[in-house]
Picture: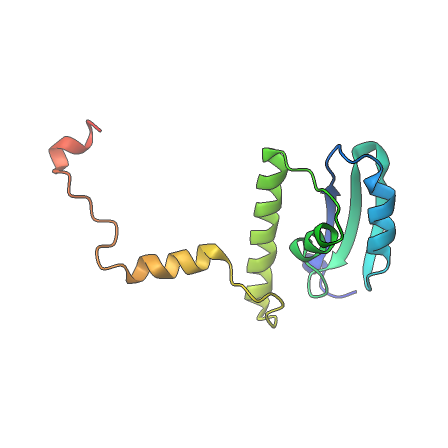
Length: 133
């Protein structure tokens, strides 16, 4: 396998309900090419190892959700996933990898919209009042 930075070891966490998702999801993921899969039933998770140029965590999660699996949706899991999606997207972008996904990240779109906004982040509050907000 290629570049060490591009090899990712992640865990996909599943919701408590319905129970028994891990072995089925692991079987499902095993069918994908160039993906190592390790069911971790006690952690309600499936470990996945992949090359970033072949898969992304976001793509694997969508694959599972499309098949009806329920991922863990606690705030911590959502934040962790969002961060990983962002990091992987950025890494792919920096590699100049061809776009696998149709949508660009919403952060990027928002940033561009903000740059073109005529007022920038101008604050109308007089300086002497700013401390008292």
